Image (cartoon, rainbow, N blue to C red; front, side, top):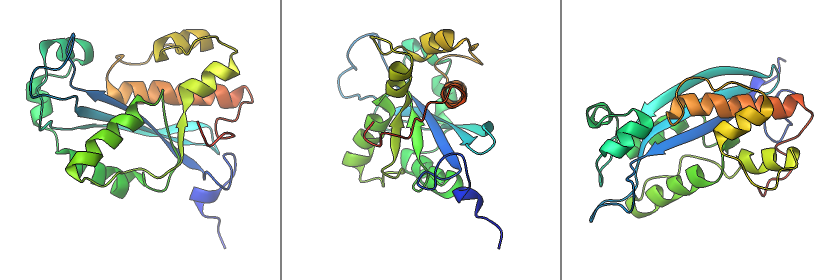
Length: 202
């Protein structure tokens, strides 16, 4: 009987062969949100990593239409995403359903750079009654990288790429590009013999 590719090698049996690296961009302003507005996800970047072959096998960006905020000029300057672009996106509930249906997000381990992405999903899923799209196995790769390199402070993603000797691919603060860069940092750690999945409490 052939092996199930989701349960093969090089991660562990617990974490499976494929993991999802996720990075979100959200509505933002130079200071506090304007009255009546809140931070909302406007792009979900995702990169799938094959732990057996140590490859980034696919990546995508899902644009998400905000319901309680607008894309500011500051946000456009930071992310390059315009109000018109984001208006073509799907609603947040559809984006979460897409992650489950097409990226197996509720069964695969997922990683992000820090805990912001996880907390943002938790905030948006809570009040709207949207089903949380992920399983319980999340890895804060920033914490793993900091420990692996013996750093005193947790670096941003761009600084971590410099430390690892990797170049920044694409545009920083675009979810799809940042997800690929974070995935490159995951592969860097694996190549150096570090196990990002050793501590499930990260």
